[in-house]
Picture 1 (cartoon, rainbow, N blue to C red):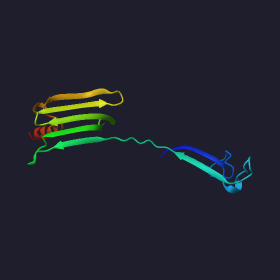
Picture 2 (picture 1 turned 180 degrees about the vertical axis):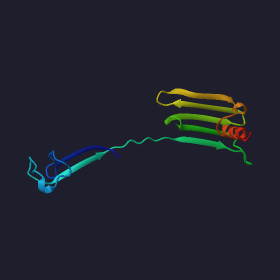
Picture 3 (picture 1 turned 135 degrees about the vertical axis):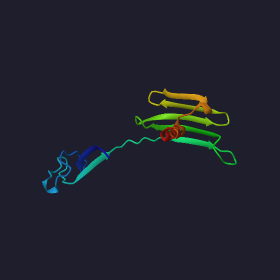
Picture 4 (picture 1 turned 60 degrees about the horizontal axis):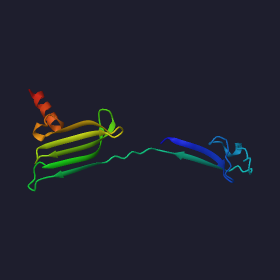
Length: 138
């Protein structure tokens, strides 16, 4: 944790003292305001915390099987450049629809958008890995 500030003051009257933090009591000079050798050392630290959230909704048929509807909305880390993006993705198997939008929240720019029939959305995600494995087997 990075140190943000350090100050030393008299332990009796609070007068600011200019001396090293680790100075021994026997080598301290008396406080110019009250003459005390007591010291109060204040150290302050700060840290930045970033929170990110992502929600996912999945609807499955009552008998089980593949989800009929999936939606993801929220923050998503771009693994190539390490930048957090805003993701909106809907996979609607009942309506044969795939929609995805990725927005850079710093500039509010659409980085990627895809809106197509789900059966035409091939060679991506897990399907991409399966196709690569099939081509490696040949």
